[in-house]
Length: 134
Ligand code: CO
Image 1 (cartoon, rainbow, N blue to C red):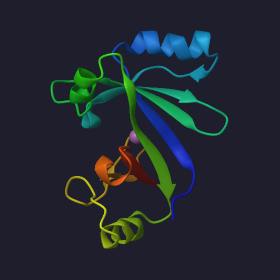
Image 2: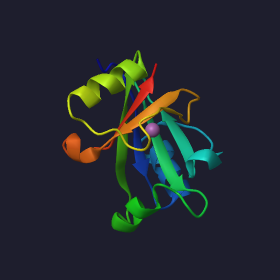
Image 3: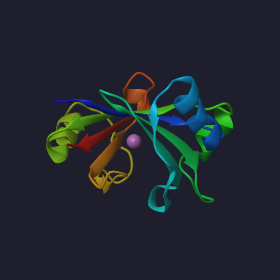
Image 4: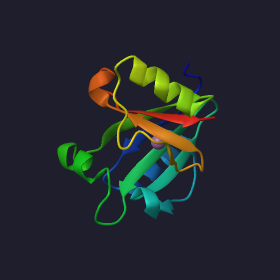
């Protein structure tokens, strides 16, 4: 059911420092910061030959990653995103298998303008999983 790895999202306490680390030390293709007010984050996209890394920093007072950074002050992997062909079919299969879908269970439009869902990390070996309709 799941397809390509779309991205790995890393929450970072200092976006400029993390962008410089990926650009200068790791030699990656690093974009400019983009504010995503609807998602409560500022994102820097790191484009790799086979996938992307998204460096996330809280934006606004109600950011979904603020609590994560409080628990992980030096940053850390926040979620991984897999592509699926049909997000509603994927959701129904997951629910039928006892997995928990976060929120209302209805897909939201994600940072790339495509429908996404998040799955409970306790159901997936401690990893927050995002599904994105390809
Ligand atoms: Co994501």
